Structures are given as C-alpha cells and as structure tokens.
Length: 379
Image (cartoon, rainbow, N blue to C red; front, side, top):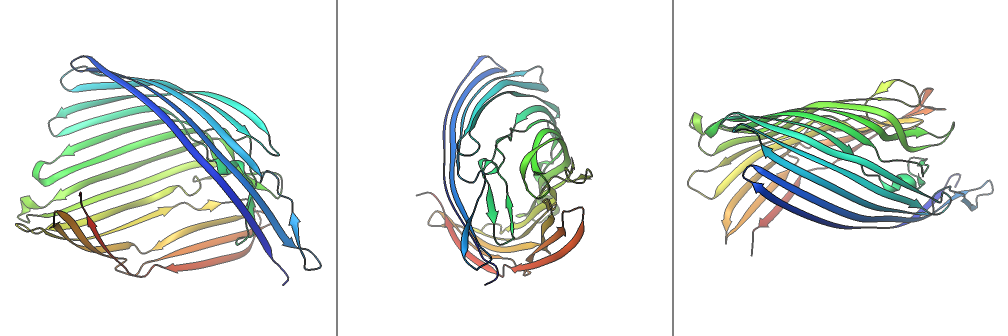
C-alpha cells in the first residue's frame, strides 16, 4: 500500500428542554402569552487519525480540537400579545430575549456568554371572505451546530474540517408578505414573498493557506417566492380529482471569503417543489394518485473544491389507496417510476479554488424502483 488513512470518531450528544407557557384573554379579540424555555445541550467527541509513514507503517497524526466537549445552557423568555383592531385587521407582537452560555473543553477550553433580543410583529388583513393578506417582520436568533466546534477528517474525499471554537450564533431580520386566496369548491392557493438579511452567517472560511472550517461571515441575503395550494376539478365535472402542489424559487447572496466574489449560500435551495395528482373514486373507498418532486440546491464550496448534487430528471411515484381496511387506510406505492438517478460532481483545484482545476469527479447513484406497502390507522 502507498496510501492508507484511518479516522475513528466517537460522539456522545444529548439535549434536554423544559418549556412552560401561560396564556389568557382579558377581553374578546385580545390575548396574552408568556413563554419560558430552558435547555441544556452537549456534544462530546473523541477522534484519532492514522496515516502511513514513509516506511509503510501506520502512525498517529495530530488533530487539533478533535477531542473536546461542547456544552450550551440556554434560557429564553417571550411575551406575545394579539389584538383584533377591526373586523378585518388583527395584529400580533412578540418580544423576547435569549441567553446562552457556551463552554468548550479540550485544546480550545473557554466559556462565552451571549444575550440576543428576538421577536416579531405580524398583521393579517381580511380583504374579503375569500382573500387574506398576511405580513410579518421578525428578528431571529439561529442555533449552532456543535459539530462545527470539532475537527474531523473525511478520508474518502481526502479533506477535513478544522473545528472553530469562536463561532457565534447567527442573527437575522426576516420579512414576508403572504396572500391566501380561497376559490371555494375550486380549491385554495397561497403565495409568499420573503426577504432575509442575515448577520454572522455560518459558512466555510479559510484558516491560513491550507486549512478551513466553519466560521462566521459578516452578512448574507436570501429572498424568494413560495407558493402552494390545491386545484379541485369538481366545478369542471371531474368529481374527486384534485392537484396539490408546492413550488419555491430562491436566490441568496454572500461574499466568498476566498475570492471576494458574490455567490449563493452553500447548499442553499435554488428551485424545488412537488405535486400530487389524486383521484378519489366517487362513492367508493378507493383512490389513485401520481406525483413527483425535485429540489435543486446551490453548490457547496470549500477552500480547494466545489461539489453539488443533481437529480435527473425527477422523482415520481404512483399509488393505490383504500381508505377503510378494518378502519385503517392501506396504500401501495411504486416510487421512482421513471428511474431517476442522482449525479454527484466534484471539482478540485490547486492550490486553492482560485487556482487551476486539478481533477473532476463524477458519480451517479441509481435508486431504482421502490415498492412499499403501508397500513395506517388508530387502534
């Protein structure tokens, strides 16, 4: 053997949450709620890496920040008030704060504290009995991934992640406007426009010329449009036939810490959705359906590579359902009707991603057809 590596990692993690809520209505059209939440999370990891030396013997390779324990103690309080201002307009406001204490042992032993405000203001306006406009502005605080604190190695790809003990939770301003339209017997549909301004977003950052890992970047933007709904074909004389769908298109912007260019957020959604065309046979317990789904995401970039997954062309499914088998619902589903597969593409550059292409790797996975039988119900 000229090359061999062994990476072993043992992880122990846990989460405990205690939440209490109290709500009351002092008058019709008004309500209050107070919520308290406490949480304790931890992750403890031990890892070891061995590689062949010049004489062909496996020897230990030092890993910085690979053996460590990360703990979080978090407390949160929120006060929420809802009020109907008129027969058509209602508002809701929430104000709160989140306190967290992060501690890490091992080579990066330290304890840090954070206090972050959070809350939202939302409004709903009933234009008429068929159309409602909803709007919301929120201040959100993100949750950290404890694995970002721990160094690890991917021996299959020949790269690794350097743990970063200085990551802070990201914060964001999020706004959205949503329109809900009820078409009565023809169905109902919702369309939403949203925008997010994210601070301290966690992405890939370089640590010197040849190391990288998760870290905070100053800011990022994300905006898009999402829609979902149901078309019912009974008004056209096709009783029992309906089409359910979801569709979302998104754009994001972040400054690449290596090149300085604007790109999408790593692995962020570009376009995705699903549909389900279902026919409930009138006056029977039988139903048949056909549907599909596809989600396309942005590439994931590292210091020296770029990779992404692609589905070709779309996952589809057929199903036959009976809604009363001894009071339960039985279904036979045939998944991946058109034999779609997943394509993985990886481009590696030298010495870094702003250099020349070193090699390209292409892999393809065939899921093949999948037949499933299910029986659901309450006993």
